[in-house]
Image (tube, rainbow, N blue to C red; front, side):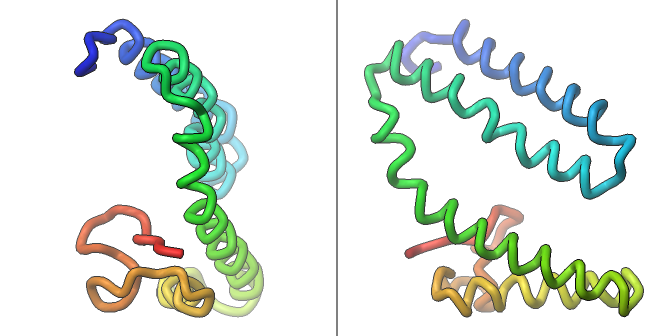
Length: 137
């Protein structure tokens, strides 16, 4: 918006809202995990819109936007796969109230194991906010 592209910002916001609605309506009948996957996939599906608009109106090449992100994405995919496999293992052996703290604790351990976290607050990869882990590869 700083470059006076309010119309394009409104387009992206409208697309995000519509995609959120579609993701919730389409995935909610299949449970919480499916709804979470739908909500998590939404930004990835809409990424071409934002990148395309930046490329077209601001002259920023897609590689300049996407290449610095690939290692953080790879680290988060490794962590997600580790936690997903652990969840499947725990699902049949312990109650949810016990599984949740184990999954949260191992999430941090998965990041530390792969050497991808920024050792910030408490060494769990969270920089004192509710933001995703601070990944530095």
